[in-house]
Image (tube, rainbow, N blue to C red; front, side):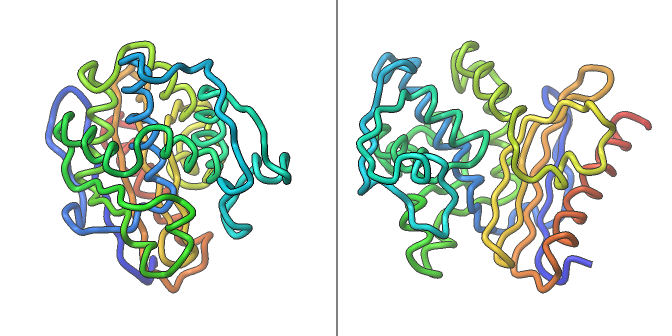
Length: 257
């Protein structure tokens, strides 16, 4: 059905072991990499190195290219816009704004700072090596930000736990992820209406159709899920259906209905 590589991992948070397929294979993250960027930035907010309300000057040189989605670029074509860290986070996580991502990545110390943060919370097999602008610069760069499904699951587990961020930062990020407007036909696609899904998608055409997130089950338990579809010859609608069906199967397994 997927006509390509599929990797998926799912588990109940707080208990149990992950299950899935291709859990230790590497997949290009595409915009899923904005999740570890957001977590690393919020750690710096927790440490008072950054403030949610401080304004950042976004210049024209910060803009991602036209092929990469950016409301900030489109609304401020001449640059020189002052935007708060809070609003940059919202743009990055809710509508997957590439310019917001690159500005936050730069303010947070770049890929080395994200790598250091991931190491500090003991998350392996999630690698942020390039910015959004660099990722779209060449086909070779598109695979440099990668994750395994198991690694993505561990990142979600770290987000769920209080050791990764303060309660305030975790609540903010999970709320922004719950408001995510991209990929409504992926993890959310076949779940019951009203199901609470805090997620982040990633897309690179046929090269990557991804979604990772935390789903609240009917009894209040939390389910982490990460699905990556790569190198697929199927239409986007089919790739998204693969993700939706895996999410529905996991929901039915853990909730019993």
